[in-house]
Image (cartoon, rainbow, N blue to C red):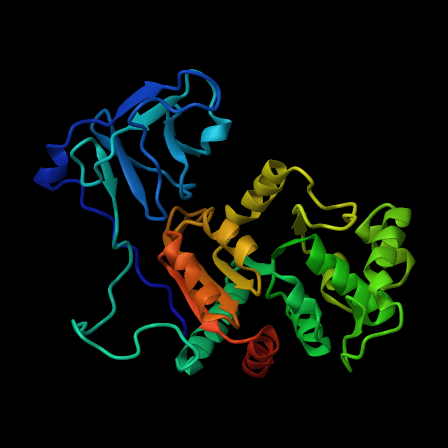
Length: 361
C-alpha cells in the first residue's frame, strides 16, 4: 500500500534558528532586474525569516527569486519582477542570512548507504521492476486522493498504435490531469487518427505511404480550417488517440512551439514565455510528473518543478518526477540540470506504457 512520506519541518525554536538574523530584502532596481546578491530558489523547501518568524516559499521553482509581499513569500521568475519588488538577498542557505534551505524534507529511507556499491546508476542494465511497482501504486494513490498527474510527451508517443491506445486509456481512466507537449506530438497523434499514419508511416505496419510526407501538413491545414483542435476533433468525429481523449475528457493540454515547427496547430504557443507561463499553471498543481521521450520539454518542466507541494490543508508532500527515454543519457540528464528528485527509467515508450497497463488495469 502506497503512503506518502512524512514532511520533516525544521524546528525553528532551536537556539541556532532563534539566533539567525532576519532576511534582507532589497527593491528590484527596474522591471525584470534583480538587485545585487539576490537569492535564487532551488527545488527544495526554503524558509525566510521576517520579523523573527520563518516563512516558507510555498510556490517554489528553480531559478526564481523570493519576493516579500507584506504577508508572505512570493516566488517570482526574474523576468516578471517589477521595479520596487522586495527581493530576498543572500547566498548562504543555513540561516546565516535569514535563509534556510531544507535539503532533507522527507523521512529518510531505512538502513545505511555503502560508500562503495555496484549498479547505482540508471542504465539499460538496471532492474526497473521495483520502479514500475512503485509508480503503479503511486498513480493509484493519486487517482484516489485527487492528485494532479502531469504528463510531458514527445512525438514518439504517437508513432505506435499501442502507445497511442494506452496513453488515451490512461487519460480516459483519470490518470492524467494535464498534458504538456509541443506541436509535433499533437500533429502526429491527430495525423494518426485522421490518416492512420505518423510522418507518413502507417502506425500499425510502419510501412511508408505513397506521398505520405504530405499527411502532417494536410492535417495541420485541415485543423486550421476548422479553427481549433477541439472543433476538428468534434466536427471530424475523431474517435481515437491522445489528443482526442483529452478533448472528450476535458483534460487540458498545453502545446509550445519550437523553431523547427510546421504550421503550427492553432493552439500552439508561438511565444516561448507565454508557453512557459501556461506550463507553469499546471506545474503549480502537479503532484506527479511523467516525461516520456522528450528531453527538452521534460527538462523545461523539471526546471519549474519543486521537490514538494503544499496542499490546500497546508500539509507538505513530495512531488514525484519520472523521466522515461530509451537513451540513458536523456533519462539521467534531468538530474544534471538540478532536478535532483527525478527518477530515470531507460526504455521505449511502448514498453513503458504496456507495463503500466498491465499493472493498472
